[in-house]
Image (cartoon, rainbow, N blue to C red; front, side):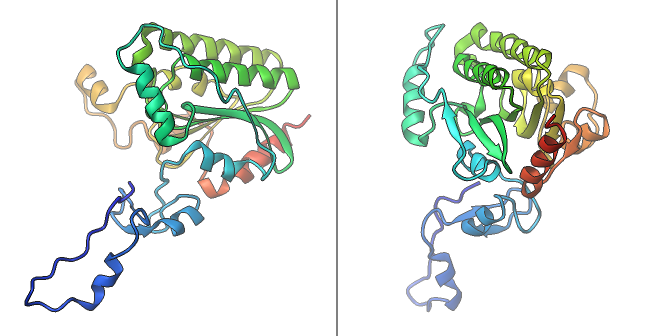
Length: 283
C-alpha cells in the first residue's frame, strides 16, 4: 500500500531536533509499506525488484501497464480496442460518471488491456486485467475486449495469454455482466477447437465470475505466489457450510497442491517461463 504522506517528527520548542529525523522528510509518494512484513520500502527499489518486496517476497499488485512492460519485449506491444465505448445497460445511477472519473484519475480506459506483442521473439495475443479500475470487475466492455482478443488469436493463429486480477462481475451492469462469463467461455472453446495455446496467469486476487469462466479454462494455468484465487470469499464459504476452512485455503500454494493450477511462478521468472512454454508449443 502506498504511503501518501510521511510526516516529520514533531519536536517541542524546548527540544532539539534529532539527527535521524531527516530521513522522514522525504518527497511524497516515494515510499511503500509492505502489508506482509510491515517494512517501509523505497518505491524505486521495489519497482526494480519487479514490484516484489525485497524483504519478504510479497508480490505487490501492479498495473496493466507495468505488467506489459515486464512481460512483453520492448517496442513490440500494439494495443487493440483501446477506446471501446462504455455501456450502461441497466441505467445504474452515476455509473457512467464514475467510469469517466476513473479514466481521468487513473489514465486507464478499462479493467483490461489487450493487444499483440512478443515474448523473447514469440508472437502472442495478450490480455492483462487491471485491479486499479473498479477492482478489475468484468462488465460488458471487459468481456467484449477479451472475446475480441481471443478471436484475434484465432485469426492470426497465435497463442493467447491472459493475466487475471478481478473482484468478479461488475454489479453496476447486472445480468449483462454475468453473461460475459458464458461469452468469454464460448470464445475460449473456439480457441481450443482451433488447436491454439491458451495460458492463464492468476494474480492476487482473482475471484468471482472471472475465476468461474475464462480464467479457469487455460491449457496451462500459472499463478503468482500467495495469490488469492476463488469464487466466493473465505468468510462467505465458512458461513455457508458452517465449517472452518483449511489454512491457506484459496491461496496459490493450496490450489497447486490440490491440482487446480499447474505451476507457481515468481514474477522475476514469469517472462522466462512463458517464453519456455511458447517455445515448447511452437509447432
